[in-house]
Image (cartoon, rainbow, N blue to C red; front, side, top):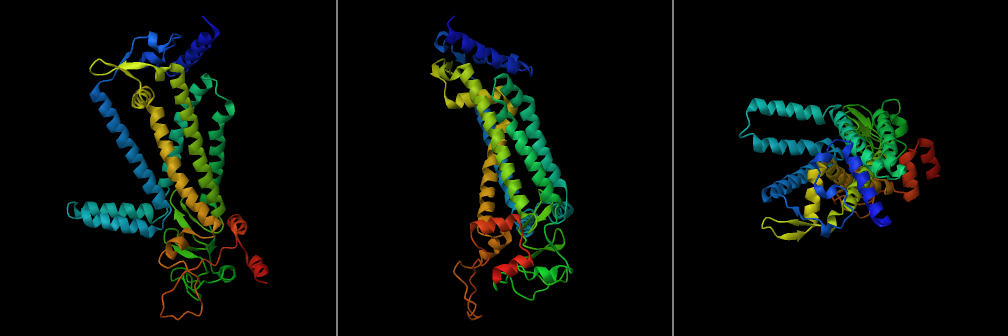
Length: 397
């Protein structure tokens, strides 16, 4: 046996030892077992039954669509105000009221109100449970397989390091005061930001908190307080995002996206390495008519799915999560660089983007302009170090 064949056989042996750690090596196809000979010298593998292939494709498609829809809906809802959820729930209840009993409708409305209109730890528990499930699978199977396949240690530990940073930012977001406006600090907070005359008017008083509303503030019906530089109420951290925790929330999003991306990258590298070691990509199989066919991408995906179902399920979830979080993270970065909040961005859609002239007659439609942006670096600095009255006075001099 030559040195090249020996290294190939040694790689196959490592792969099989890694698979044997979980006790599933007996169910693996023959293409994953060590064989230094070329695939052409080996008998072609039998193709899976057509019904099994169709069932696999149907289940995989439904799974991907379901995960993508749920992840997109939850991230969209967490980035919007509670009125978005209220409108969607109200429309859905109107459509289903014709077939759903009244008592069941009342229970559903109470459950939705408790979930999205009161502070609840349900989404926090769900957040922690999803992370525990992903990292449990990553540690139990992916990390062990990669270690047996002699992956570098640093890429394997990177998801854990990112997870530690994400949990720290999560605690800061959920435990920190977002910038509550009280009767003691309302007079000082009024002087921090100027009123633009479009989204924020001077002299308005919150009817619930009975305090003058500073510019860029909003009353949160979930937390039942006015929040300075209000962005949105995030159900995943069970807290409002405001002036004092906006920086921690941005780091939380960045670290969460990076964590999902790192887990997806390591898992994908493992599956690719297994395919390379098995040499299945250069093999062939017998179709339903008994004809020998070259291995295609669909066959490889189905083979991996049937061999590593939990790993493939987790990979699909973290890839979709990375895409959804990446989009939301990009939007949050855009808001930070332009010194806007989610609340201001949503409200500004009602107006145009041209400059607003203060001397404009009141009978004409108001046009919104962002007066709070002071350049990229100053905007980022303001996210992590909120402005105070003294800093605002220095800038106006």
